[in-house]
Amino acid sequence: MTAEFVTPAASDLPGRPVPYVLAAGDGERAHLFDQLFTVLLSADETQGQFGVFTMEAPRGQAVPVHSHPDVHEIFYVLDGRVRVVVEDGEGEKIDRVLTTGDFGYVPAGHRHSFRVESHRARTLGVNTGGFERFFAAAGEPTSSRMPPATPVVPSPEQLGDAARRFRNDFDFGARFIE
Amino acid sequence: MTAEFVTPAASDLPGRPVPYVLAAGDGERAHLFDQLFTVLLSADETQGQFGVFTMEAPRGQAVPVHSHPDVHEIFYVLDGRVRVVVEDGEGEKIDRVLTTGDFGYVPAGHRHSFRVESHRARTLGVNTGGFERFFAAAGEPTSSRMPPATPVVPSPEQLGDAARRFRNDFDFGARFIE
Image (cartoon, rainbow over all chains, first blue to last red; front, side, top):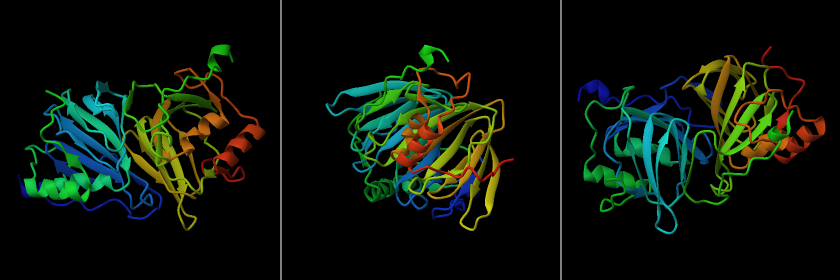
C-alpha cells in the first residue's frame, strides 16, 4: 500500500447544521476490507438524528454477521447487485438479492450480512446518527476515490475497539451467506 | 384524470421496526404537482428518527420557496440534474446544479427551493422522521408508477392544511429561481 492511500482525507463536512453541497465522491472517505465508504452527512450536522454514506465494493466475500442494538440502518442499491440477509424477530431470515433501486431495512438489533454479487456495486446507507463513522474507525481514512486495491484488514484489536465504541456486535461464529 | 390514478396505493410499509425489503418503485406513492414521491421508510419503522423517499419529476417549474423548522432534509441525485437553492444563516444563497451522485443538505429552518433541469430527474431524500408523509397529505396517494400526466395541484385549503400539520412553511412571496 503506497503512502497516498493512507493519507486521511480532509473532512468536507461542516460539523454543524449548516447548508452544504458535495460533488459526487466527496465526503469523508475510508477503506475497510474491500469497500470504499464515503460519509456525506454525520450526526454533527443533524443534531444526532441520522447519518448518510455511500459504499462501493467489487464482487467479494460476505461481510461478517453483525448487529447494532441502537442503530437502524437502510440499504438502497445505487448500482449493481447485493445479496442482503437479515434475521427477523423470530430468527427467520429474509434473504434477497437487491438490485438497482431496491431497498432493504435493518432495524436496531437484527443480525445481518451482505455480499456484493455483481462485478461492482454501490449502495447508499442511512443510519441512526453517529454510526456512520464506524467504518473509518474500523478501517483507514483515505483520500482515494476507489475501493482499495488490496483489502484493508484491521487487526482484531482495532476492529474490536471500533466495534465496542460504536456498539457494533459481530458474530463471527454465524454464517448467513455460504 | 382517470379513476385508477386516484386509487390510494396500499402501503408496503410494515408500520413498526421490523426488517423488510422493497423492489424498486414499491412503497407509498403520491403525486404532488408534477412529481411522483415514493416513501420507502417512515417514522413508524424508525421510532421517529428518520424517513426515506424518492422523488421523480420531469423538467419543470421551481418548487415554491419553503422551510421546515423541525426537519432536516437531504437531496441525493439518483439521475438527472436538479438546481437547488438554499439560504444559509446569513441570508446568502447556495445555488448549485446537482447531478447524479451529488448531495445537498438543508438543515431545519433554512428556506430552499429546487427545480428539475434535465428531461427527467430522480432524487433520494432523507428527513427527520414524520415529514415523509407531507407529500401524500398535500397531494394524492396513487398506485401509478410514473409522475402524473397532468400536474396534481392541491387546493389552497389542502396545501395549507398539510403545511400546518407537517410544519412546512411556504413563502409564496419569495422567488429563489427565476
